[in-house]
Amino acid sequence: MKRFERPIPESVWIDWMSQWAELCHTGLSALEALELSLEWMTQHGQHRRLQDRLGPCIEALQGGVAPEQVFGAQHNNWPAPLQLAVRCAQVHGDWSQALTRQSQEWRQAQQFRHSLLQSLSYPALVLFSAVGLWILLGSTVGFSIPPLSLDLPTTLIMTGGAIAVVGLVLRSRVSQHRALGFGAYLGRWKIRPALQVHQHFFTMACELEAGVDLLKVLNRPLTGRSAMEKALAEFNHHLLRSLQRGNRLSSALEQAQAPGFLVSQGRLAEHSGNLHQCFNLCARIYLTMAQQRRQRLSTWLSPMALGVSGLVILLAYQTTLAPLYQQLGQWP
Image (cartoon, rainbow, N blue to C red; front, side):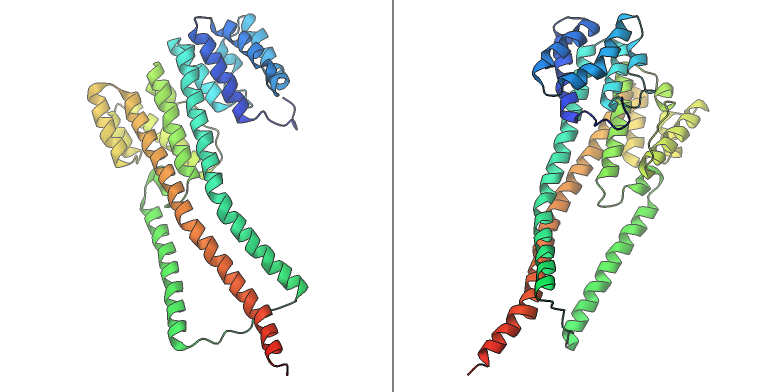
């Protein structure tokens, strides 16, 4: 892939993976389904770019190269869901199930991001309009905010509100520092870290369900650069070292500073042996957390945007129209 080439959109990858999964479900081999999936995408606007990316892969697979090496982690330009689907299919052999699950999860993540952008678009439009009105009036009329003359009750109310805001910020920071492990980077409002934790444990659950050993899953290097991704890599490292010393899963999770519900699920997994269910439940919990935070953000952001725009309009009226009306009223 060229350095400055525009990447293929996620929706194109999702549609192609869904086509590949459907063809594998009909009984075709993975290579035959891959070749036919490109033919099915000929009517798509991105077919040529898909052909350029996947053509060398088909040639490598026809030459006997393993799929995990073709779509392996060393090829950083391949989408992570595609790499995960190939790894799982290489273990349990069910290409249709692996591709279908990853394409559905990827589509769900894409829909979540779109809904988040839609919930933020209206407040952003309101704030942009208010700021634009402020700049327009400032450039055309050249007004400035008059000095405020506040009485004692108003001053006390504003001071109390400022103290309350500072207190809430400090409280959120204190609760954030009390959390241990990767939970210290979740915060109370952050959506992206919750999605990163969800994706991390979902990846572990898929590989464990496919039959990959837990130690091999934990030993897989993570190349993320964000604070949460580094914390998750450290969590995997501590959990791996604790398991290698012979500790039980629940004890290893406690030593790795995992959340309490994950430790409880680890105890259940020790008796049932269903490790993938343990981490899959954890992934669903953090996905629900991200959805709740998105809903909370959209709930209070719209009224705040309306309040700010109303304040801007009030200031604009007070500094432009009100003096004009006063001058008109003084005319004989």
